[in-house]
Length: 354
Image (cartoon, rainbow, N blue to C red; front, side, top):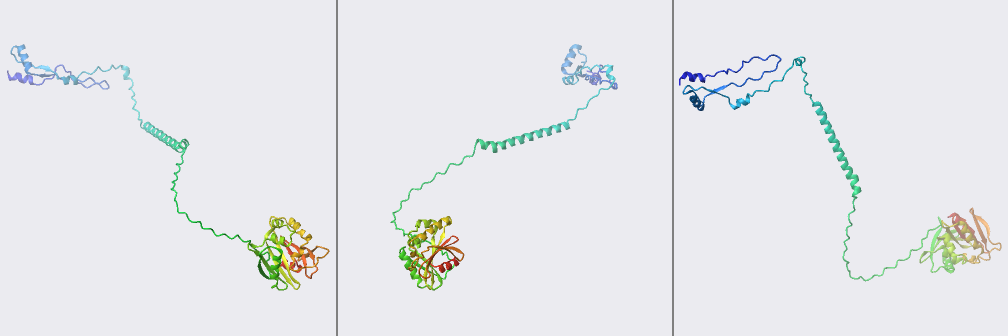
């Protein structure tokens, strides 16, 4: 085939059906894209078909459009119809609202809701643990530990050793005198008139004139009881009454002068006892027929006038004189103390030393 024909069909040609491009009118719609250019290709198949059709003349190229170009250059839909009224005012286009502030506020609200929910949940949990749980499940004390019992230990019998007898506590003694010229003690084997008289006579042998000697009278049990001594001297006196009114401890003394030795007895009233009742009980002495027992020697005949009221060192007394010189029974009270003296001078000596 001639080379001119070959060069002619190989030279690219502009498609005759493509319109010329021109600038779109200002402000108008954009015209659609032009259709894809027509591409003429020669293949062996197309050449054989061309030879059959033309009887041996030069084959003519056939237009060919690739499928990809058909899809890419598909015609767009027709443009919307624009009326002249739409050219009056430009359409206002609203810009998309920026929701940054709204989004930030929403996040804060969500955070606050989450924090509030968390606080409520934690508070409810603590209240349930510390308030409700102890009420529903109070603590229970652990069961007591079982006592471990030791098997009894058998020991060899030990011979019993008799305990030494404890000596009974002796009756204490505290003098009711603040002072005396001398002191002595006498232990009696028995509490009776003869034992008392003998013990006091013995102690009077060493007494000096115009002196007061305290004599502590005791037995195996300690200081003699006031109720026992008065009952031994004057059987008319009830020992129970004396024991209820006066303390057990008492003080015995001897006053010595040129006429002899004269016993004196000092008793203290109990705190809970009545002094009036005690005076009534002691007044019974005035009718006793055994008043001579209070003296170490026979005092002689008592004054027929009986007891009289007097005073010694400012203390009221009841007294009875006897025939013997210096003998006189005196009964006086000094506060809560009762003094029974067989000598008036002896009574005054005692009152000075109480």
